[in-house]
Length: 233
View: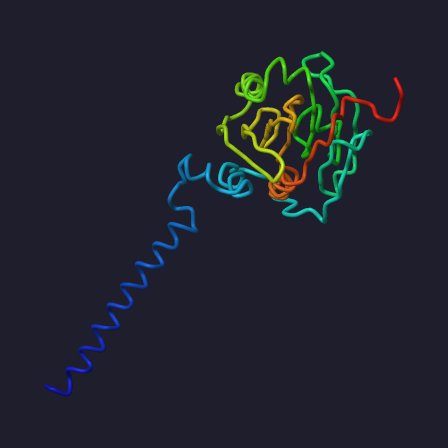
């Protein structure tokens, strides 16, 4: 009988190890396998890219990544941001908001006509405006866009964001009737608080989530884009 004790102890130890392993693997699945849904507070504290991935469900299969990024600017070289090289259709000029002159804009997409018309094309538009800063402010403009977009899209909520230059909020919409899987509206203000900065991005594929993260990390508004420094008054 004494010879059997080591084997019995070994068997019991092996069973305990296996049970422990199952428990550990089960916990890992609940963490990395998205078995447990994240609440709003946990999403709010994530880095921007992880927030977008947690909020955005249905996306086109491709592309999963863009081939690279390049810097674009407005005519005055005061609005700067990094966009995918595939977004080679670029436009800048006077920004019209609600049929009124608002300020200056810079936009990029692979197909701007589609981006403007149907929102089913990935792309970005950055608008800078003194008048909208006075009329609406950052939260007011988000509220106005939410009022217009909520009947057409599923509203995922309002979230904070911050980069090394700016902090603000954004609204995330999904499953829009226009065919857009994801629509992001960001607002913030210039350093002197005189200009409101508005950023709209259409998210179609997984690559656009990374593009959104890159754009928000890279965009800057230097000086006053509404002031033409290249011509005398």
